[in-house]
Image 1: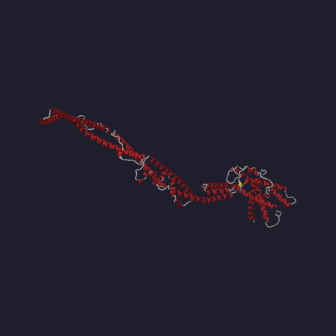
Image 2: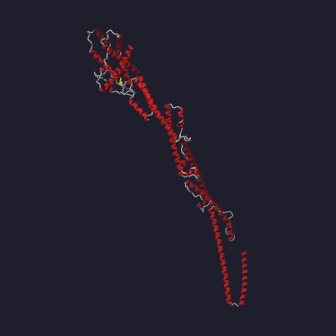
Length: 583
């Protein structure tokens, strides 16, 4: 109604103005005397111009109205789009559509639209911040060395700015934060482990860490690289250090055991051992229990190796002394019991092995102790037999002296000491008469000993049974020889002596030196079936057939010559002792 009144007022005002002007124009035309045609033409032209002015005004008004419609529609569409992109159903205080003029509607929606635009801008900033952090942390996890963390470079999808989407990004960001923290803790754990292991091994940890990646060094001032490749490198570095720690500890365990064995072997004073207590203290520790700085350093290992080498050299020298001492003890036991002594080349070979360090000294000493123990045990088992052997040798000395005395034609002549010789001859005959029983007892005991021990009884390297059999054969031969060369009965004194000798059978023995070539012995057959290895090795039992005879093999005569020489030399020694005692 008001607009209509304004139109009416404008029309009236226009009509009054135009009428006044037309009147004034009529007055001018009348005064001028303008013809009617020109007057009509001017009026038509004025009317046409007025219409054109009105038309332009109307067109402009239509354009303005259309623009307002478009602005209103765009505002409505933008408002709706903002509601959808922000995930909101409506905005409190939003004006109802088509209430009032276009300008009123536009003025009514503009504040709400501005509010939604502000919310959108705020939401976009939130998305940009969260997405920027996600991209940055993702780049750190991926190990990118250069990353542009400018927020303006983050592209945000403005079509979905809902709180649900923002929450999803925030959850992803929190997950990445947790993963980053876990990785940082893992990196710190690896670095701490490297520090501890390097300290124990006496190594420079900063160089090892920098070699893995420069950013891991705290002095670098750059955020640490936490990528998968760096974690793998740190893990492999820690594993290699643990392996090195294990190897060094095992090496020190070996050196520590070697040191303790050498100290115990050589009775090293405590003050000399104390300087390497840091090595021996590790013997009871596992790798996880070793953490003292420098306890597994290379210089510790080198010092221990040098000490072990020095002690090994010293041990070799002392071991040779101890070896010679025990060898001498073994030789004395063997010589005293007339057992076989270990060969000299074998002993020299053992000494060479000691010098070269190719023989275990503990095993060598144990072997020598076992040999000495076995030698003592065998000497003890031979004692009863050896006592009878000594009696047999003494009896043979007496037998030999009696033979020489019987061959002396002047034995009954009156001379100084003749009565003493007669007394000794009587004693010698008593002893010689006991020889067969003594030999038989020796044979029995020796056979029993050999059967029990399954080896040959050697006397200075010669089988004792062979010596006894040889002796029995020699007695038998001498008896036969005596029967063939019996003295004539015209000599009464000689006959009496001969008759007395017959009462004591088998007491005259000729020199064994004349017996070797006269008749071969059965010993060769026996020796060929026996093991003649002496000392303390096992051999086949000696099966004795007493007093049997068979031809000898030439190489066995040497053994019998040796046995004969042994008995002869023993007899000479005992004879000299007898002469001295009788004198």
